[in-house]
Image 1 (cartoon, helix red, strand yellow):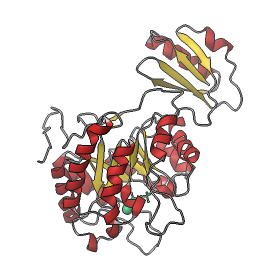
Image 2 (cartoon, rainbow, N blue to C red; image 1 turned 180 degrees about the horizontal axis):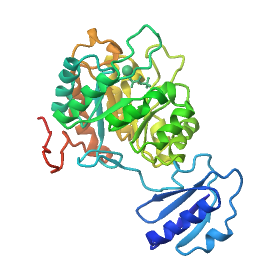
Image 3 (cartoon, protein in one colour; image 1 turned 90 degrees about the vertical axis):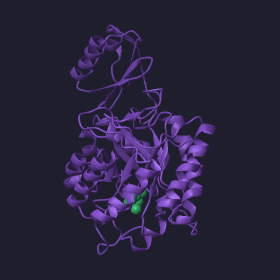
Image 4 (cartoon, rainbow, N blue to C red; image 1 turned 45 degrees about the vertical axis):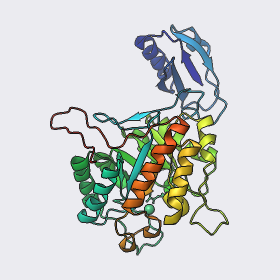
Length: 357
Ligand code: PEP
Ligand code: MN
């Protein structure tokens, strides 16, 4: 159920409706939009008695949402969600494209800084790097853990880049959230419902990668798990699915971008690195991702990919990343987008313009 408030409803009226919903034993999720606020109701197993709610002041109507995902759907919120990063001009969703770049894993301070310097210089606003790695083999490099989180915090300090890193379990989720600007939940954990619920309690944006065999509904329901716990800042990420095709590591399903955008207000990024697994296919698919309407791309970059401890074959060189940025900058206006290069840190004490060009 969804309570749609009148455009002129006051914050007090919205609050009163939320309280009425909670008194009925349900959970209220106010979702402010440009025109009006809608309040999602969750926690009900059957139909909610709508009578009383319709009578409350400021209420325009009470409607049934037929889809299984409610808070993630465009019924609840018509306009696109834009996730902002306080104190900076960076955003995910909205007109400006978000570019996330960095190594698969943080391997050392030197490696991370060498890559961060180049991606900042080319104009990325977000730096990615794994501190905790979900690896197929228990004998493969598992990540540097807390040391990697500290290195990324230093990178944020030095270059202004906002940090995206993965949490692989409930045990490390809060620690990761303390250090990161965005917490990634990886493909292998897309249906780890316990982790999704815990992520719903955080007040940090969550980058949710599509499971490698997840349908569109399953993907949006995973986002709904996070939102139903009160965290509405979810960024979706298409990273390829398993198919019979063997010329790539995964099949990058770009058609999910317009499909998601039709149904959901959440931003969606595309990861052509895991989506193809091959360096020579990353740039073409990054261009295609922007052309198809994605809100940005996430790519793996390594200055010495042949020495990388994970995902070297799909990591592009810094010079290729700079080329990708130039190409995206040219494609952006055709799809009514912009690409700001570099991150501007607003005048917080000691702040600086971190555009490293
Ligand atoms: C990653 O981003 O390095 C990663 C492990 O991604 P995915 O969960 O999409 O495999
Ligand atoms: Mn990787």
